[in-house]
Length: 417
Length: 90
Ligand SMILES: Cc1cc2nc3c(=O)[nH]c(=O)nc-3n(C[C@H](O)[C@H](O)[C@H](O)COP(=O)(O)OP(=O)(O)OC[C@H]3O[C@@H](n4cnc5c(N)ncnc54)[C@H](O)[C@@H]3O)c2cc1C
Ligand SMILES: [Zn+2]
Image (cartoon, rainbow over all chains, first blue to last red; front, side):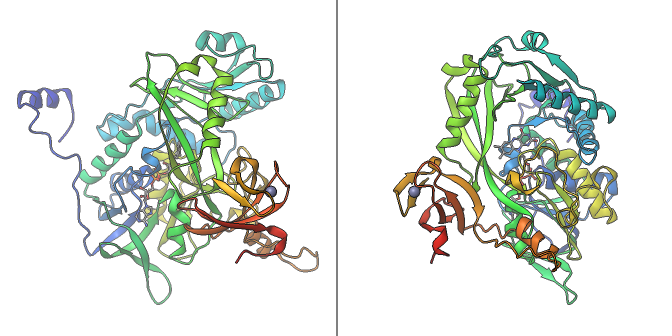
């Protein structure tokens, strides 16, 4: 069923009894050309682009819980393409371009909102670093603006500009950045993939791999039986090490918990996404009015989808230092997600040393914005056995060969690259 | 989380600095042997288990000992801690 204003009118006349489910709830068949493991945004997008771009529709996506129950439904929904390194910027800009056409392509309202992403700086060296990043972006054909304090003041007069320790000197603005509604992104990809013939199989946990005599992966063992597969693609985010270990792989990944927070609903207050340059704090306001904010990972290895209080305190301190006006806002909810922290903070979209097994992982806390391009490039890799031109740097063996992608000195621990 | 420091007793985790997985052992780094593979393994590859795990915590705001903590990564339950220099926890 196509969604449109006419459809809405027709359904209204029928008292909204005619809406069907958005996608088929499929049961596993014996085998598929390609099985994708993990029903987060990346797996769903890969399944969709396999069908749409490469015409491969004999595809199953298996998810151990419900689609979007992982990080795809837990993130703070920021999308941007303000990266500096040649290995990253073309990829994230490709993702941004896909975001810009996503709703028309999927026929689904993903609430993509290009309300701007503003990274603040608080010192001269930080201004230099942002100027350099902005120049690198422009060299890649991506627009951005270096704002001085007055220009920032016009956008966000409520910030603590004259803070004695961290005065706000300006910011780097990517006006095309913004937010999208994470659940709608998952549902939109699921619906569009399902309509093209992809089987979306929920409550189906992969518990092992079927291997042939040569060791190649030829299927997956699941809680709902064995499924044969020509190729298997892993997109299980925080569970990557755990699932890959069942194929005997050890990876340059640690799982860590990241928390996020939302306040009670307020009238429009915060114009776009704002990040604090002197501490780890970032904030935006959802269309429902809640302030959505977060900060650092808790910092210790974790598979628990919840964090601890020290980080809650740290995030709130960052918020108070940046915008004291939020001090009397009440926090409504907090939650955590388990992320696949790669050792250089950059992702992996590559074949594995095992034939038939492909890997999409290492997205750390920045994989939501990558969802469309990650799906696009993973589908390209699965279909062609060669990396997409924007994802050639995301090699699994780069840690062995010394080709780390050191965008921000992030990653599980800052001393490893 | 509260960490049972063998020296100071049960203390809030925010008194500690986290170092990570206790399992990797730094390979000998004599220039004669080509140990690039061992170094790669030590620096980057991790078991990253879901469940029982041993990690290193430094009691920065306490006795300043390095501890080897036995912790469950799914529940955050801490089973025990020993001084890191005393060798592996049981
Ligand atoms: C609190 C928080 C805030 C974030 N904020 C942002 C942000 O603002 N911007 C941004 O770009 N990124 C952000 N991220 C990161 C982003 O959410 C992730 O990088 C991205 O969602 C990961 O890809 P995914 O959507 O495919 O993962 P997930 O949604 O986690 O998908 C993985 C799926 O695999 C399934 N799975 C696991 N094991 C198995 C198995 N054995 N069998 C079958 N299925 C299995 C899981 O159930 C899960 O549904 C944030 C993350 C968190 C936790
Ligand atoms: Zn102590």
